[in-house]
Amino acid sequence: MFKIRKSADRGHFDHGWLNTYHSFSFGRYLDRNQMGFRCLRVINEDVVVGGQGFGKHPHDNMEIITYVVSGELKHEDSMGNGSIIKPGDFQQMSAGTGVFHSEFNPSETNPVHLYQIWIEPDQSGYTPSYDQKSFPNNKNLLTLIASKKEIGSDIIKINQDANLYYAHYESGQEVLLPLDLNRYGWIQVISGEIEIAGLKLTNGDGLAISEEDKPKLSVLSESKVLFFDLP
Image (cartoon, rainbow, N blue to C red; front, side, top):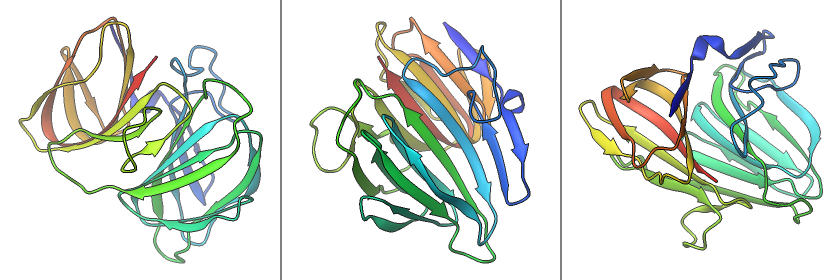
């Protein structure tokens, strides 16, 4: 079963300093039919102009993953972490029992384009934690970014039985996604054009997948995608 979420149907706000799209209900955007997909609660695509950002604010009991598409993002939090997130970087913050953080564009002139993802943890009350890793841009390879599985230090650990993958595909590739019948999938297209089960997806489109075994993804033009394998 496949259900497409077109980019144009997302919640959208242009605040001048922030141009933001919400795949699911978030903040001032409320759609009772779009409250998330399984444990995937938020996919926000943001563009923040130079010198602007999100001031210090709290989170709790959420696995938060930030991916920078272009530009740079400065992060600071109440755990004492401070870093610059660059293109190709994935940052993870397990908010757990509670954490404050801020995110700003350190450039005065260049915008930063990012995706922020929230995944509900498998239980509440985890100790807050932080991680940030840079992943090589290996074309035509589905790279595991985040998982609860104890696979090694090369991936980000999250407190949920979910797997996040990233891929940069060249045109003409055909890929069987690592999804079992008893699991659920979500594809988010960052850029390019792909096709799954006759459905074409392009920049900003999402696709919910259920009751499918190893669905085939066809790449119609050079594309960057996020793939979520969910319980």
